Length: 369
Ligand code: NAD
Ligand code: IPM
Ligand code: MN
Image 1 (cartoon, rainbow, N blue to C red):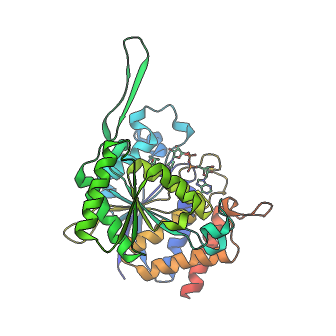
Image 2: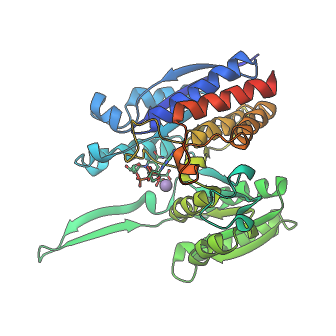
Image 3: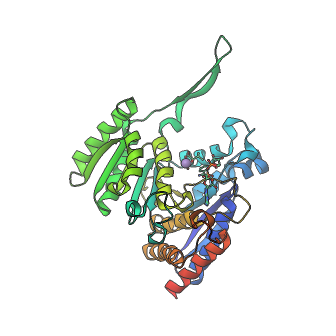
């Protein structure tokens, strides 16, 4: 069996806790013969600042380039609030995304049957929910220049962020969205604000053209991003694939998370283009952050991290069966009543991060056994 080289970047806060949970599942994958990995662990974010004075050391970036795939926990936290903006923990993650050109961020929001009552919405609105948010990840206001705070003559200040998109950037993420829709229920919604933003005008124009030229059989709907946020809460199952820019995608995916029960449920894949040898760079990470409010307490839900590993098996290594088995193990664990605090009903006695990961690893062994 092929052995894949994984770079593990647990990061800060609950990052190391959910990454350890994923480690338990990696062991089970190995034992059951589903997949074997060589793993290397390194620092990113606040812990890298503490060790090296930078959130992403050059050696770590080199390891990231050499790995078959990267799995990242989370970065950031109040401990680094005083660090200069350019070298804050989040800058390490943004640099990884940008330098590896991981432009396509897939954020699936699935409501597991056992969690329909854990959602912030009524059961009938979310039962069977399966949305794929396709977030552009290396452009837009996250990286546009200028990005600065200047002091004006009267001593007051002026802050600027710049939203920039080229048609090439929009085109490549649009292809990802339509290709995915072709394998799903064949519907794409594209969210922007062409009523206010020039980037929105170009976004809509490019999506419309790519659709007409290459994917006429896929259904396309344009939706203004503010309305999209509302529709996600009003009638979320109207969406299948939702393609949007970097900032709207960040916000809309946190909304989508609450439809599934918790931010702790949402995995993601950040993918680059496929190169000549058929390989593509990829980083897999939960949608959630370092959750300083629950860090170090064995309370974090590891499912977003473990689901990110399942995405890694599927998208980086073509191990669809192993990915299905792992997704199935998550479904089984939840169906069997396993709940961390974020998805447990009031008054229940929830399990911790380690117990949840162990339950999923056991469910995987049972499935494969
Ligand atoms: P957050 O996602 O860390 O937490 C928001 C809320 O969700 C908190 O109440 C937290 O307890 C809860 N939560 C998040 N993940 C959970 C899980 N797995 N299980 C149970 N509950 C969970 O967002 P925040 O508090 O706004 O940000 C904290 C730090 O994380 C900031 O420094 C931010 O920049 C960083 N952040 C990093 C990433 C990343 O590394 N990809 C993503 C988002 C935020
Ligand atoms: C995410 C996070 C990041 C983002 C931060 C930590 C840079 O919120 O991955 O959703 O805004 O992209
Ligand atoms: Mn976010």
